[in-house]
Image (cartoon, rainbow, N blue to C red; front, side):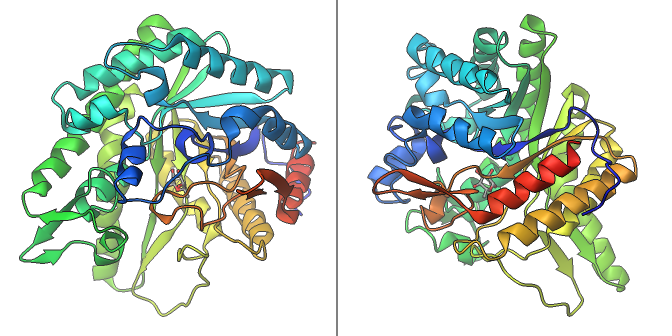
Length: 407
Ligand code: FCB
């Protein structure tokens, strides 16, 4: 372990979760409806985190975490259009208090992909007034919670939301794009029989992309009007693209990087206090290097978090690593993965990149979207029959790193 501490004082160390993936008992959102129709795996009680958050935060504290990222569920908070549920808000206030009692700093994501049924059935993100609806919801939540939390992210991974829902068609609303009879992404599309492949869905794809940028910007303004002191971020997934020596591959990498990350970030950069980085994988154009694969089939390249951070440096905003982690059911590679990931962050910090926090994905094993409960990303293993929690050995390796770098 490096003895020189490059991590600034007050650096946030923790893990992340998302409401639908861990809470359980959410039946009025698009994913629950899709599950009831047999289009995606059933989520059901998930980790029952809605009732067991105290126990889970005790674990986070015991693992040395001083911060925690979680999301609030839109469908609980606004179960019918324009009607806000006070009990749901009270629940999240209690959750925030539970974190503070343990000395854990919260960061709240306002929307991590799932939509209330009324909104989904009314056209979802394609709706003309989506940005207004989102801004109203976001400012309501911030008005209710900002005495207990000052860091809010608007949208989680807008790019993944739009590609999976409106290009590959493997997630709600299952609008795959089909060009000349060929589906744009066979592997992803095969995960569900619900996909409808049409060329015309390309129009929805671009409309949703545009609406997401508008939604973030409108929410930013609405939040700042009522709570100018809160820090607003967007959580952007950056897939790092590299080209080998071949100039064509290098050009391909630049173009891919722009469409994957640059386009969205340019659209929101003027209304952003912090950038949230989710880093999982990279794409290498050309070259013969062979990489190990995680359980979910993603290349093991944790050190390239450094490159993703260097890429984001151009936006001149503080960065929070809001997610980075590995699916590893046997916990055989996770410790090494985390070590290399943290080393990549340290390297970026040494070169002056303004990184403020690191949240491992995830605190708990959870519902991994169209992969159901098969993928195990957790520092903590969940027995879904008994809801028993078991801390994995790699969680202690992360703890040792936190202790070492917090000195
Ligand atoms: C990210 C999502 C998160 C989780 C991880 C593995 O894309 O934000 O909810 O599914 O991938």
